[in-house]
Image (cartoon, rainbow, N blue to C red):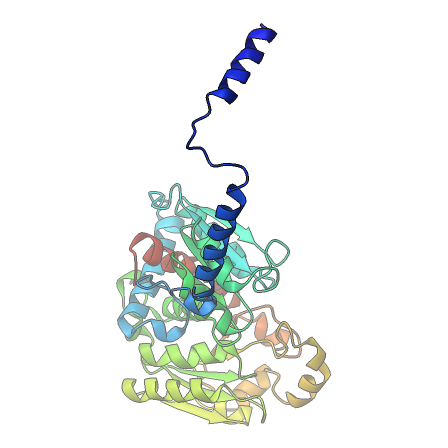
Length: 382
């Protein structure tokens, strides 16, 4: 057998075609081929991230101005309907998201938003995949562009909690699936939806179901007083309240006013809706005539080093029953806070009183987020 193989090998060498390339000629041809390839590559364009095409036609919820007055009202009513269906009637959702996954990309800690989103996705029959700062680092180990393209190729929706608002804009620019802003430094749209849902429930006439009445009817001409920092919660309130016919008066310390561009847009929204926006530095001015009193943390995540400075700047801004009543708020005023709450912002006699609806407000994060997910992933848009 070995001899036969040797003879076959020898014969193959003898019978090699005469037209075969000689070993001495091959290097020259290969060199010419490589040289040509090198010359061609020099004429090729150098590509950068600027050449990556943006994705169009995908519905998102990034800012409060993404919703019209009707869309806002519809989302609130849908959230009320889901809550009634689940808690009163005990009906399942029908699992419209069965087999689908929603990524929760959170670069900041969260309690209410995470629990609300995971339970909402589960109720709709889908799977919620939590990706915290220790799982993925947005824009650190991988660019936002790359993260958006990779993650959106594998899931059906993304709930993103970021730092700078530009981060969620970049994620949305390249995402092939809907993105919901779970918080950025400029906006917190899902929080304000929960606030408005809570107020809608509180002001719905007895004998009526909230999902059968429009918030533009129940909330029209109510006045909200904001006492605190000019932060993302205030930005979202300013933009949303005019759409349901509400007025807002705000008091912030000097140097802690809301973003000027967002305030300008909010004032336009108010003018179009025929509502009022009052801007003050004295809490008593903002509280006068208020139906609803709202505040938030003075020291957000990432501002811990400013704590001493901020505590000093916000002296006199702590909400107490005495301050609110003496400032001339309506006799039946109500209190909201998005949580977590600190003692320096509001005292126990307000926070734990019957006037406070903060825990109902917290629960409604689930139902409003659920309504948004349903609109974007099931109904394919608002």
